[in-house]
Image (cartoon, rainbow, N blue to C red; front, side, top):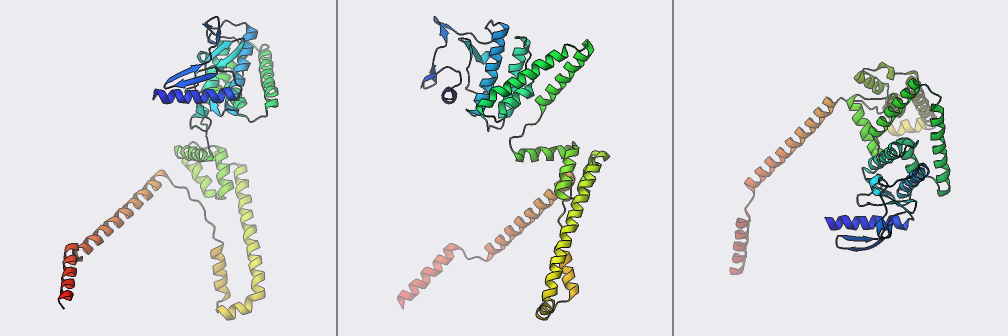
Length: 368
């Protein structure tokens, strides 16, 4: 296990070093021993960021370099560090070097975004509390790392974010003590909400999350909009409102979506009828002679074709009952198959008897 862990760290170091990101140069891997470039001077290793004594200007440079390293690891190497903090960053020659990448994961890992969000929180906490800097929020840092930008646009985007942070800090200096306290409380709440948010990796995870929220009764107005727009079924929205006890889901916008959906359905049905009616005028007599069908039967078939499938919401109890019914049906089918096989075995000739009769018939043929 230790050998596999060392191989993973060697592989991650090579990927990071090849991308031009500051890290110790990997040299050799022998069994579970990993040899890397020594970072230090005069035999003394370079300090960790936690142990380095930096001025305010150097601390700000370290923050910017750390943010850039996070983005480059994600965008170039497709990696998330997973344990990034002041303990896994070295200050060498006035630059930040990243170390300890054995636990780093690919960006398509199921928990990659959660790890990245935690890394962003750790970095911001250190530079805000220890460095005394005005840092960006965890959401801003997370979005900067994950947003697809060209290399030349990275510095411009980072400058805009840091300028916004500085302007916000200057603006808050004119606030009263009470207003400043309220603003800090709101930022803390926003931070806590972002840290607890669900981060989907695919559209399938979004659907699973929405279904879970619907079953729990936590449904937003946007979900009702989506249901109304996709199904055009007012019963679905009413069922959601009834389940959650929130009549405000039937907003004017939802009603307008339903009305437009119904109007579009009527218009499409009318167009179908007109097309069919025109075709019937051309071929009415010949069709009747060949098929012998009446106009009433044609209308019935048209009405059957116009029946639309509507999605009916079901409660968890109804879904559970359906599952139990399906299980019972399968069980009964298996039982019937077993009984049929049992009856067949009763009348089936045994292999040894069949073989004996074949041998006897062969022996009789030889005697003749």
